[in-house]
Each structure stands twice: as structure tokens, then as C-alpha cells.
Amino acid sequence: MAGLFDTFTIAKRGLNVQQSAINTTSHNIANANTEGYSRQRAVAETTRPFGGMSKFDSCSVGQVGTGAEITSIQRIRDYFIDYQVRSESGTSGYYTQRNETLSKVEDVFGEPSDTGIQELINQFFTAFQEVSKSPDKSDVKAVALQNASSLADALNYTYNQLEKSCEDSQSLLQSNVVDVNSYLDQINELNKQIRRVSAVGQTPNDLMDKRDNLLDQLSYKFGIKVDRDSLDTINLSSTEYPDSSLVKSDPTDTNYSRLSYVKSATLDESTGDITVKYYPLGDENAVEKSVTITGGDQELVDKLNTCKILIGDKDGIVGTTATASDFSKKIFQTYEYETDGSGTAVNSVDNNNIKGEIAANQSVQETIQGYMDSLDRLAAGLAYSVNAIQTGSLDSSSSSQGLANNLIFVTYDEDTKINTTSDSGITAKTIRVNNDLITDPTLLNCSTTSTSGEGDGARANAIANINVLKMNLSNIASGTDLNKMDRQTFLNSIGISGFTDTTALNLNAGSDGSTIDSYYKTIINNLAVENQEASRQSDNQETILANLENQKASVSGVSLDEEMTNLIQFQHSYQANAKMISTIDELLDVVINGLKR
Image (cartoon, rainbow, N blue to C red; front, side, top):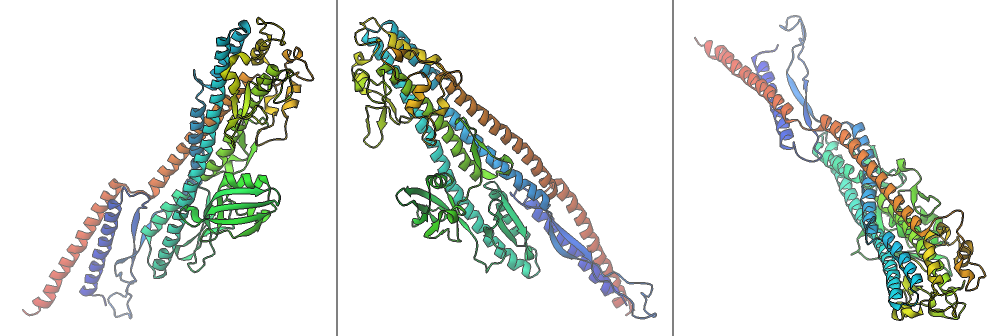
């Protein structure tokens, strides 16, 4: 039958239960501001009751309770909210990074501005209008040529800065690779520790908090898929590449993947082989590796040089040889894109499926390249039309008067580091003003013919009138799209076809297309719209994420007010159990010492 010693045991168990609850409360309070910490709760259950064995037992009317015990320390967590937070975190990472990069691109253009390309375009044509009024004055010609040089310099600078923006995105991708691999290694190690603790029947709450915190950070980089397994372990993969496991629940399984960073990819056009050099695990201090891809093309090279990330084995190795079709599966591309047809922007196919900072750093390069191509077309259209009027010829280097140096805009040769005497292949990066004209402005051809006299400024006036000429600039071949109009086709489209010196002055505006000024404004407007959209989406995601984080905090976060209330409750219960022990002590004293009297 149950006696005083059984009651004493019940009280002692009660003390232990309240002590554990107080310890848990203290742990919660200590970690109230710890990032990623989940509130814990001591779960108490009644112990196995004591029942009478016969009708002569004093407890024959039923079972007698034996107290309580702590069965577990429970981590308060809502896995569905975790899933929502990570999903929205990936979307937030994408738009936040995209907005940040496009804002820098807007700063590069710096429009509207008194020193921007748009103002320099206006100054260029205004200067040639002045030349047409005073074609015999070399100082007026010098000012016009200086304006042309300023415009060319601005195009050069803007293009180079856009290139640097792409390079910055690629540098961020390398940092992303290093960070992601670090997160994955830490998660993998925590997985092993959690498995060992769970295997002996304990609950590794703090270890699981650390792992979940790393998963939250990882979800900002790219979309993740988490599958929970036995012993509180997880299997982890990317939503874009579910077949490539990143973390295994089984510690003995080493068939998992890590990311590597592409240093360069080059195509041997004679063989069709692509040589890819890469840094395993993204560590540029490690030994550089290379792989040869057979049956490749320039499109695959461009993809490698943009995406920059490979999926390798646990050491980041992707092999030494591969076919183009097989190797394409090892490129970690977390986005899809398509051009909008005008060459002025690049749009995502499905933004709802794009997750993470990595996708932003990859896709924004395509967007920036779209603006670089647009600048190339603007520079080419300007150079071709101005030079054709200046020389009176369709040829990219000579004139009807046999003066090869009469071109105003020429191409800079990046290999020889000198200006050519041609505008062939001219781009925003390579456009320059003819040095001979800068040295001797009198060489600037302003008159209708070589015998027109010094007062004839018709040719300079024709150049000034290009400002109002509609042209199909978006159809000019660019560096990334050569399947469009070449130089002669473009000139034919604006009425320069088989002309003489005099007919070259009569350009025909097309019914469609745009002027150089309006074309440039379209570039700026498209950029503003894209960045505004990225900013709006970023703000929306920030709001959504904040709401989800609040929901998460309401479930898993530590409320000091609530913990202090619990502490008072546990304190009173502890005191009551202590009082019970004191009472039993007095009763035992009566039973033991009182029997002597």
C-alpha cells in the first residue's frame, strides 16, 4: 500500500519537474535575443500509477497517482511557417539583389543629367548645326569635333561601367558559391551530431535551431527543398536540381554535391571543343581544374560565362571530359530568360519560380547585356549615318572623294590599342573620333562637293538633321545578335543607297523606328521601369516576409512577459512541493519518534 515514503517520492518528483521547468524557462530567457532560437517547453506527464493488488489494500477503490516526470524538452516550431518563410526569403533575395544591381546601373547612366549621354547627343547635333552656319571657321569645327569626342567618351565610359557591373555580379556569384558550400558543410556536420544525440533518445533542440538558422540563410541564396528523415535528420536539395542531393541524412552516404566557380570558358571553333577552367568549391586559392566539353557551341560558352556555377561532387569536381548535353546538366542555372524582341531589355520567363540571390546575380547579367547591346546599336547607327554623310559613301572607310580619313567616328582596335581608319564593327565600347580630324579640324567635310566653296555648310547641316531622322536602330546587328542588319542594309533603310555626294545629303526618314535621341530615352525608360518593378517587388516581399517572421516569432519566439509569468507559476509549484516534503518530514517524525512515548 502507498505510504508516507511514497508520498515523499511524489513530492520529490514534483520538485524535479518544477526544477526542470525553471531551468527551461531560464534557458529561454537567456536566449531571448539569440538569432534563430526557438522557445522550449518542458513536457510533464504523470508517472505510472500504483494500483491495489487485493481487496485488503487501502487503495482498492482505484489506482493511486505516483506524481509526474519530465518526458521531453519540446522545441516549439511550426514547420509549415518555416517552409513559407524560406520560400518567400528566396523570392525576397532575388528581387532585393536585382533591385540593388539595377539601381547601380541607373547610377551609371546618371540620367537625367547635364553631363549625361542624352545631353551630349543634343550638344553634338547642335554643334554641327553651328558648323553649317559657319563652315569656314576651324574653331567652330573644333568645337563640334570636341562634342563628338565627348559623346564617344561617354558611350565608352558607360559601356565599360556596365561591363564592370556584370563583373561585379560574377564576383558576387563566387562569394555565393563559397558561402553556400560553407552553409552546406555546417548543415551536414550538424546533421551528424543531431543523429547521434537522437539515437540515444535525447532531443538536440539547440543543434536543430542552428541547422534551421543555416537553412533560413541558405534559402536566401536559392530555392531549397527539405525532406525530414528519421532521428531528426534531413535530406536537402535545390528546388531547381532536386536530383542533386546537397545534404544526406545518412552520414555514411558521401554521394552529395557541392558547387564550383567557373573561371573561364573558351571555344575552339576548329574542333567545337570548349575548355572550362574552374575553381573547385569556389576557392580561387585552390588548384585550378579544367574540363573539356565536346560538341559545344558559343551559346554554351556564353551560358557558362554568365551562370558561373557548376554542380560537382562532394569536392566540387566535375570530371575532365564531357559531352555538351551532359555538361549542360552540371551548370547551376537558377533562372530562365528571354529577350523582349526590341533588344532593350531582358525579361524573366516566370518570375514566380525564380528564387534567391544567385538567380538575381545570374539573370541581371543578361539584363545588363541587353542595355549594352542597345548602346552598341545606338553607337553604330550614329557612326554609320554620320560617316556616310561625311564621306558620301557606303564604304566603311573610304569616301567618294577618296579621302579615307574623312570619317568622323572610327573603331578603336582593342588588340593594337590604336584607332583604325574604319567604322567597321563599331560599338559603344570602341567608338572614337578620328584623330586626324581632332588634329586638323579643317579636314571636316562640310560642303556639298569639293568645289562648293567655303560658305557651303550643307553637309554639316545634313549631319545635324540626323537628330530628327527616324531609324530602325533596334534592327542593327550587335555583338550578341549578328542576325540583323549590317552596315549597308541599315544605310539603305534610311535612304543612302548608290548615292553621289549630293544625294547623300537627302536622307529619308522611315515610317517606323525612332530618332537617336528617342531611342536612348527608351533605353533609360526601360531601365527605370525594370528597376521600379524590382524595387516594388522587393518592398512587397519585405512586407510579406516581415509578416511571416512575426507569425514565426509568435510561435517560436521568446516572450519575456510570458516567461516571467511561467517562472512565477513554477516557483509557486516548487514551493508547494517543498512544503509537501516538509509536512511529510513532520508526519514521519510523529510516526517514528512519537511511538517511543
